[in-house]
Image 1 (tube, rainbow, N blue to C red):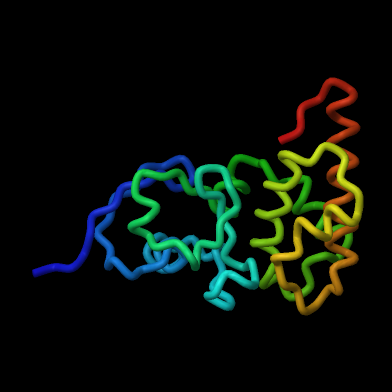
Image 2 (image 1 turned 30 degrees about the vertical axis):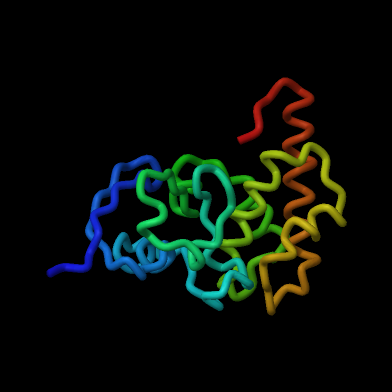
Length: 167
């Protein structure tokens, strides 16, 4: 008798149906089964932020959610955000400000920054630091990351003030 459960969910805009073991994490499902390797497996305890994805639009530690719990849900990974060009400005700012040294934390950091900037109109540096406090980075010392996010927030605010639209 199989212990696998059939799940159906939307990942990066595409319907996905697969049978999975009940104890398989969403992070392992995305990374190993769907080959979406931008979802990094770090601490596997929800402390480092490397596995952040958008689950029904909310930043979520994919290592703390079972794949079966996401049945029927919408998941967007760094790959999906990249494909729809929602994070192009963040990617450019991280590069320009050298905020991605080893790169391990970058995908989770960018997913988190993207979600934060969707709701934060004019965040100051302390608000940005608070927003990324659940993402660990051992390389940058965070200042470059805060600089990158701050510059994108300012640029988006300027575009919105000029009648443009922020992603």
